[in-house]
Structures are given as structure tokens and as C-alpha cells.
Amino acid sequence: MKVYEYGNSDASTILVQAVEKHSLAGLEAQMETIRSMTEKDFMLLAICVEDWNRDLSPWEAEPVFGKEGFGGQAPRLLQDILSVCRDESKTYYIGGYSLAGLFALWASYQTDVFDGVAAVSPSVWFPGFGEFMKKGRPGCEAVYLSLGNREEKTKNPVMATVGDCIREGQALLTEQGIDVTLEWNEGNHFRDTDIRTAKGFAWLLNR
Image (cartoon, rainbow, N blue to C red; front, side, top):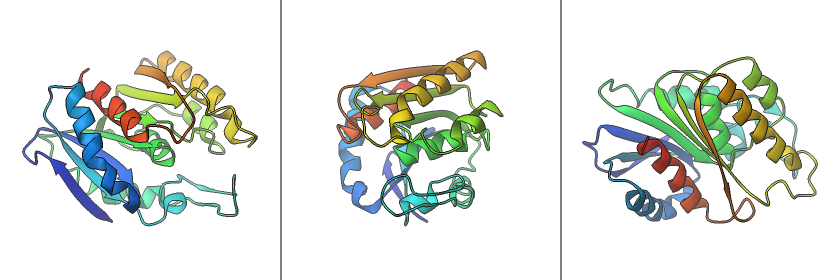
């Protein structure tokens, strides 16, 4: 696991985000967008994953698109992340985009280290995830959810369930007393990913 630090290392609030190597170049722009949305000081820990489908999936699953399945190695990644989130004087928020958003949401059910989650366009269509949410409760008190308004308009029958899945997830979290919001963005899954992620982290910082 490679960890990259952005922002003020002395800040009391730490944002944790799993990313692919090719996404590192866009994190400075994301940082600037977050700063434009909040007055809070923070540091971002970017966790660079080697294999997106393997490292961020909570359990093994068959391919949903293409030929690559899901390796179910999220538990191992989470343990690595928790090893760098040990300072009890800090406030930690975890977030991510797409499958990293799903990972962030799943992680909140495994630990109470994170005070909030920014699950941005999360892959809540992931097989079995809805049932998983019904059986537990996050260890945090704040969850930001978002989705593009065209994401559920896809020919892929599994991914087309994402809109219903995220609405059901929001309703469940609300029933459980979690401070949850669901924001709808313009466009499909690949539009304004850095801005959408920044909005999620800013919402947590401004609570």
C-alpha cells in the first residue's frame, strides 16, 4: 500500500481516499475544490491501490461488466488503512468514488475509526450489498451519498439498479438515525469525478 499526503500534515482532520495511480494527478485540483467549499483545515491521505476490482471489493463476486471479477480483498486493504489512522487526537473521514465509494461505505460498518463517510457515486449495485447494509449499522454518524442523474440509465441490468439501491440505502440509514444526505449530480458516472468527490468531503467538513 502506497500512501500520498496532501495538505497540512498538522491538521486535526484527515481525509482518507482510495485511488488508482492514474488518478493521483487530479488530487491537487480536488484539494483546491474542497478548500473553496470549506474553511476547515485538513490533510488528505491518498491510498493508492494496485488492483481496483480486487482491492476494493468487500467479497468475491462474478464479473458484472467485461471479464474481470471482484477479488474480495477489501478487508486486507482496510487493515492496512487503519494502521495509518491511529492518532486518536485526529478526526478521520473516509471517502471515495465508484468502487472506492462502496469500499468507504463498507468500511464504516467494520470500524468506528471514521467519523463520517463520503460515498460518491458508490457501486451500491455490488451483488449482495443491499442485504449487507440491512444486517448492520455504520460505526459513524454521518454519511454523504451522491449519484449522477444518468447513472441508472444504462443497459447493464446490474448497474441499472444503482438508483434504487442508493435510495433504499438512504432510507435505511435515515431509519437508523444516521445523518445522511443524498445529492444528485448532472450527468453519467464519469462526469466531474473530482468535483463530486470534493463536494462529499466538504459536506463532512462543514457539518
